[in-house]
Amino acid sequence: MERAAEDLPAVAAGAPPGTPTRAPVLASFAAIYLVWGSTFLAILWAVETIPPFTMMALRCLIGGAILLGLGLLREPGFAWPSRREWAGAAVVGALFFVGCHGLLAYAERTAPSGVSALFLATIPLYVPLLAWWLTGDRRPSLRFSLALLAGFTGVSLLVAEQSGTGGLSTLDAVLLLVSAFCWAAGTVATRLVPVPRAPLLGAATPLLAGGVLLVIVALATGEVTGPRLDHVSARSVVGLAYLIVFGTVATFSAYIWLIRVVSPTRVATYAFVNPAVAVLLGWAIEGESLATGSIVATVVIVAAVAVAVTERGGGTE
Image 1 (cartoon, rainbow, N blue to C red):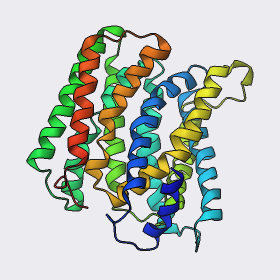
Image 2 (cartoon, rainbow, N blue to C red):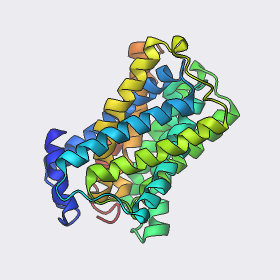
Image 3 (cartoon, rainbow, N blue to C red):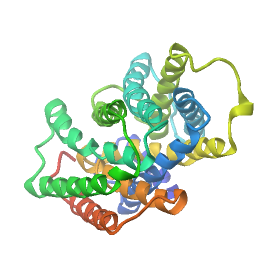
Image 4 (cartoon, one colour):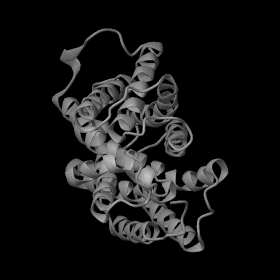
C-alpha cells in the first residue's frame, strides 16, 4: 500500500487514467478485497455497544481527519477544496457513508455479518447499469457478464448455505439492499460530481462530509444523548479502531484511486470476494458453521472475480 500511495500524485497531476503500474493496482485490489471483507465483523463488534450512526460518524470524522492531514503533508500543490468540491463531496459522502455504511451498521445490530456481506454483493449488479445509463460507459461484454453471473451464482450458494444460521427480518433485508445500491451510486457519482482530484484529499472530503451528515442523523434519531463510556465494551472499541485505521484510512483512499484509473464495473467486483472473507472470518472467529457448500461457493466467487478483473471489455477505462 505504501508503493500505491507514492504513485497517487502522478494520477492527480494529470497522468492519463489507466496508466498506473501493475503493483499499486494489485495492492489496492487486494486491500478492498480482503480488508473490506473483514470490516463486516468489525462493524458487528462495534455496534454491540455503540449506536450505529454515532459509530459510523466517528469512523468517518476521525478517518477523514487523518487522511486530510496526510494530504496536507504528502500531496504537492495542496489546495483547499472549493465550495463546488465540498458540495460534490457531500453527495458522495451521503451515498457512501449515510446511505450505505449507516444503513449497514443499523442493520447489523440484528443481522449476521456474513449475511450482510452477501446482500452487499449485489453492488456489481447496480454499478454497470448506473455507469451505462449515467456516464455513457460501454455495456459489459458477454465474457464480463458471464463472470458476473457466475459470481452471483456463488453468492446465491452462500446465501442458501448461510440462511439457516441466523434470522433476518424483512426490514433488515430491505435496508441492506438499499445500502448496496447507495454504494454503487456513490461509486458512479465520483465520476459525475466535482471532488478534489488529489487522491488523499479526494478521499478525505467525502468522509468528513459524510461524518457531519451522520452526526445529524444520529441527533435526529436520538442516538446522541450524552457520553456513556462505561457502556462501551473493549470489543466495540477494537472494532471501531479497526474500521478507522484499516477499513477507512488504509483502504478507502485506495478505493477512490482505483475508481479513477480502472473501470468502476471492474472495481465493484470486490463485492464478490467480501462475502467469502466475511463468512470465513465468522467461522474462524465467531464459530459459525462452514459447510462444504460454503467452500465451493467461495471458490466459484474467487474464480469469477479473476475472470472479471482481467476482462478488458467490461467498461470504460
